[in-house]
Length: 146
Image (cartoon, rainbow, N blue to C red):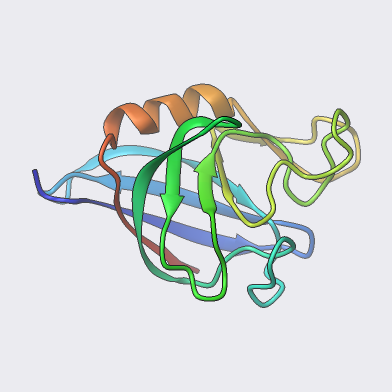
């Protein structure tokens, strides 16, 4: 099977980065689309910024925290940038006191201010992520643009 391709087209805001994710099959047909949520662009700084725009290889990976998830590889100056489930980026999760990511990409179906702080969170993340994992079991090439 040929490597699937995906694209995230971003929109930058002071406290977060929103995006549109699309996954294509080897013929270029759209297989899946969803929304993304990341930290704001702070120059690719570790733990406080989204990663730089570019083309990356994404592979499956397992961890105790997330189970099976997707790993964005070869990110310049960064490590363990993942695509996984979660809700909070740019604002703190009330349960943990910090965002659900430190540079990773959250996927979901919509944006809603869940905690009343006037910063959107991403919704339906777990089911959206599960569908992505079902469709891209071996990973894909990811292009991130504005």
